[in-house]
Image 1 (cartoon, rainbow, N blue to C red):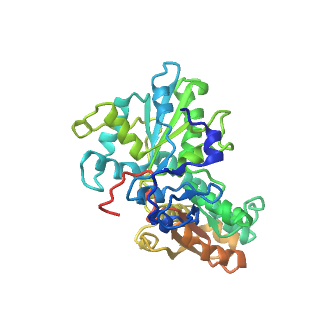
Image 2: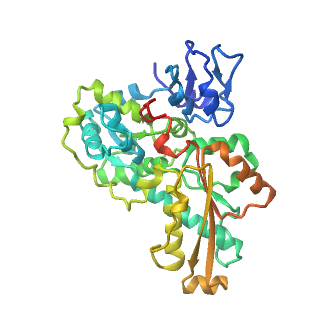
Image 3: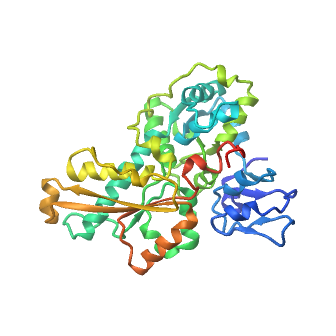
Length: 399
């Protein structure tokens, strides 16, 4: 059965099977109270109008009775179609989990073997999403600067977005959580697309042009640690080139299964690099998968733009970690033109990091009341960030 984008938008990504044991583990981890329970021990169900598609219930279910929709058949069909040029991007967090599916320890970096396996599967080009993570940081970092400058009435920033604090927009679970719970506060979300969607747009424009391939023939696949990315890619607004930015998303689990189904001996593969047209990255994208990583990269970008110097010798480790809400601040010395424009010698940027979407409610309450002290807030739906996403390899021994 073919999975259509319209079906995903109308019915969501996650569903509970009829053989559900009714144990309630899923209820405990749902960030938005989307799981309907008649009574303990009976089959539960998911309310699409509340579900953020994060898949935390799926990876927590001890009986494996929760599933996500699959686009694997569509991807296999595209790979087998000689009229299609199939490009794939891989998110940073995938390489930290994939090796577990092949008997290796949790946290083993499978990057080289992962790229090799994907080329064996028949993808025409294999790219690293860290490339577009840098694009996201540039967009979000400069947007933050523009919002702050506008708040200080600096000339030239009159047309900038004005709402502070600015919230990240790269986590599709968080974006849907915000749409469902804070529809009046959406102006605070960054206007930047997620790295996956930026990469998809670039693949079908710049990438297609450089490779001499018609965008209509490009089939864009993303391998993600996140089930909510399937919902994101199907959103009707993501058609930058006249075609879907991303045609299909498969999870880390599904990639592992594709490798096994193809009879590829993953552990014996010689490591290979990704393709280099869009393969370079600064390293900022690699830390995106951990909560606080997006914020750290954005802070470094803002620091470099405003001061003209790299952020060195300053400890910003406070933005890393797994607590529900953390905050930090960095004082940025302003270079000459910003000193003149603002009348300030330095600017203190205050940030917050939210791990687990349910923990954002107190932060948003302060925003709604006009009492938020922050300039920038990172929100990751999954506790700990994308490395613990709903599409990762399930290992109940470490849950």
